[in-house]
Image (cartoon, rainbow, N blue to C red; front, top):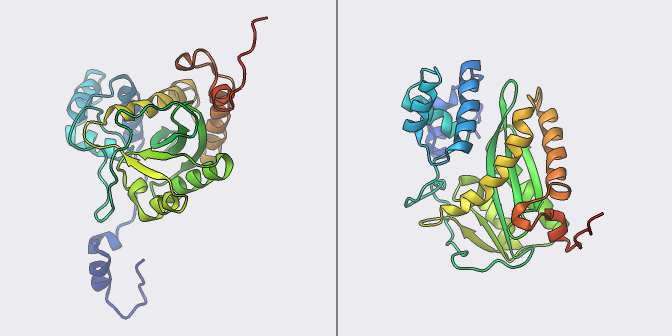
Length: 274
């Protein structure tokens, strides 16, 4: 966005873009090994205690011998895309200027595949570093329709996952997300408008809907991510891909009566006992 050869001074370009002049000269630094260790543990504690905010997480970490302050915990939580789950006026906040859509799922009976799709982003730790994972999930069957891994939190990888799900499985009546900037961006919502899909966003009183996708993240992390210290991004992508294929086609779900998401989504008959 910044053109150092342009006649307009850098200060003027920064003003036009609405960014800090100092950010032009900032060079990103790699996350320290100490912070990576804390981030990994914060992620594990969040799955155990999703209601824990930065103060409680700070105290839990201190009980384990990790000397860390509340503000640093808050910074790391923001970096790994975590926030405490509890009832409050807002969930994720959209970027300035992004439109927020009303919540459409209150008291709605979800009774069939492709009635409602949902999406969310989670943090995936690696041996050295981390990536982000986005998934598009069919609400009724819990089936993961598409997913992408990214090293950054821009909207592009979310749009890629959405486009793949639409191309492979048609379209839902309603698409639900939180109010994160990726999902409120014009580029993301334009895809939904193009397909004439109703847009629903979690807001006041809808915090429990985050728990729905949190169950998927819990399975992914405890059954795959935490058991494998991925060395590279391609290795993480391959491992997550194998697990999600297992999650859809092989892993039985108690919420589905012991059947798999594939069996429910494609309306396959339950196999008779041998």
